[in-house]
Image 1: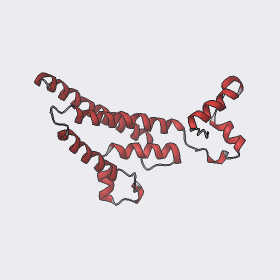
Image 2: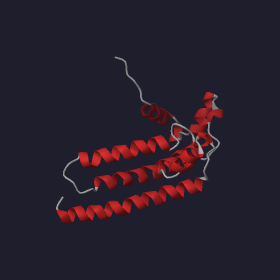
Image 3: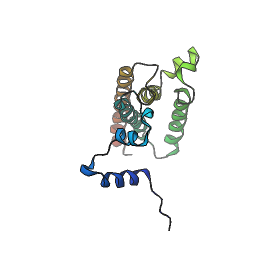
Image 4: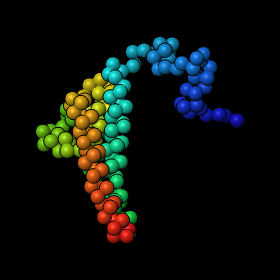
Length: 161
């Protein structure tokens, strides 16, 4: 029987074999001789981009989930249209530096642009926007998406949905 290992299983087995359970990416990279692949930028930017991006987009989903309706199609279609639109204007497929002036101005309206730029800072060590601005915009957009969803949820509970 062939047993396939996932990355998580391999890391857990490696952790169990190492004394004092000290597993780190840097000693592993040194042993493999691939130390030059480690990013120069702090990984906290990547973690912050993932956490705040997830917060922002989950609160965006809460807005659509809080719409008082009995038909799921009333929520799903606008949600999908908005998210696909944000995906294509945000700099995921075409970098912000390669966009035209008008397209870049539209991309700055999307929170995904700031999450993508923050992840570029964390992984590539370079981005177009200041990382602090990325963090602030993601947090503020998450809060701005959360407030209407709470208000709509209260309204839908009053209406009996």
